[in-house]
Image (cartoon, chains in turn orange, red, blue, brown):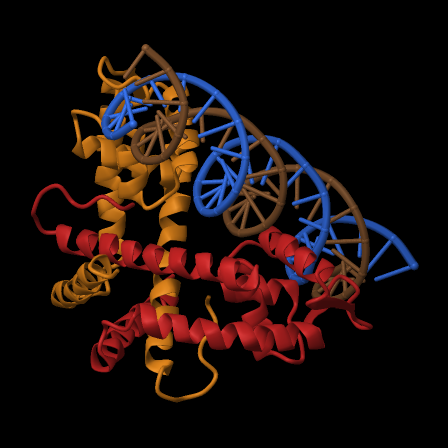
Length: 154
Length: 154
DNA sequence: AGCGATTATTTCAAGCTTGAAGTTTCATGA
DNA sequence: TCATGAAACTTCAAGCTTGAAATAATCGCT
């Protein structure tokens, strides 16, 4: 996924884009992962789950989480298990539907996340520092239109 | 890594870009992974290693591979182990430095990769079909300049 | 020659990830 | 009511991933 196209031709331009896209996100992701580990002794998947929950104080279902984070159900189960055992989130059984449980940040989890998120935002600002504000806006715009087109496919 | 910034402000534009970048690459990556599995019964990491080797008929060292693919040494060991056991690549001990071995595609591996790569290129063309050729070129350009700035940091 | 540092690689534990199979609960229509 | 199917979730095996520790071979220096 990281090697480039070996020749020129019609479909090559998009392949080139894909390679670049992947290398950029892997590079940044690796750097963020390393810093999360070193500075906060946590991981990217845990951060992702906490970020989602932070936006939803009322809580989220397991299936909400997996849909939002673009990962499988079984995956979320494991990550939430670990977060629960660390006291950062809770699974609250509901009265209505006993199959489901609302996952929420604990007070400690919320406090912990706020601190990590602040550092995270600064890191991203630093790592993407060479991209100008204007360029960032244009890139974001293109990626956004890609996304909405994607969602509207059969 | 997938949730968005919750407020507006100075550093938010790059954070927004990062979120979009990550969601786009995860989306495409998931689709490619699924197709590689279904159509060719292989995985993205195996494909990546084979793609790197395909570009270097003379072979690559394990450390060349891990550097090129942006993954750890131990990681490559496992993937190459599996490719060797499938008869797709070989580890050739060298006369000179007995610590190292040249990893090469076998004839079967090379043939197999060529077929997969052709399908892969078509998939990427399809998945990024909504991005115009011109947009693709501009996006690639921005990502390329990000990359070269990145490499030039201390 | 020999010793300490460096380099290339493997091994390992812990955690992430998927997809498939299994469990429990709910909804629906005969 | 109650069976049948759908929905929410968990479990599991296999593979990916990292970072640290262990091995082995080479290099540089005296």
